[in-house]
Image (tube, rainbow, N blue to C red; front, side, top):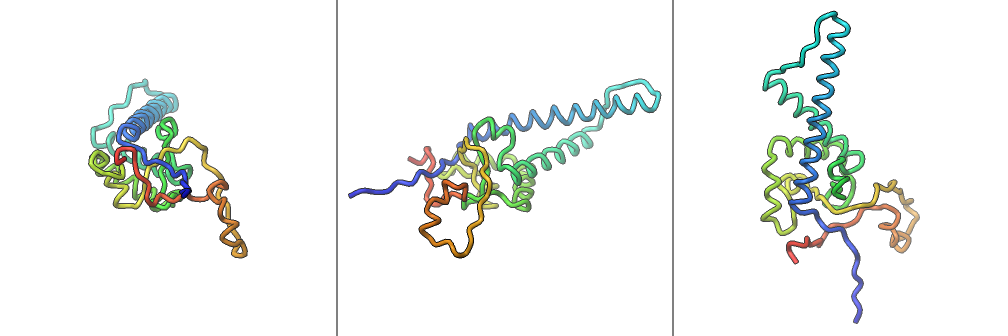
Length: 184
């Protein structure tokens, strides 16, 4: 008796996801700080005033950083499925069906991550390595070292056997029944 085993992606665990998030947070913070400093330099050059490092209030600084992080996450998740931090860790954010995130879901996921960052800790007790935002928005973070492949569209005339190689052509991968290493 033989059993066909289909290689499905593993869901990423807490350490991989947290380290990718730290890389992303540092990157967004550094880029935001550089933009503010460059803005101050430009203002000093064009207004004939002396340069001074900007000292935004706590509310303004945290608001600007939050907006920058929200845009950063949503754009990367909606376009490539991975931020630079997730790329370094070999991770990709997908829907629970293995498809790329649509823009509204990417924005909603980014918003939930910003408002409730502690939700990432749910991975530690989840048998499926899901954070709170994954459960709410039916997403998953998987290990995926391959670059994003171009989507292919199938004509209605293509039969089911022709779709057998869909995973090789870059079509979504099913995550139904995927078990994480922690639950094995």
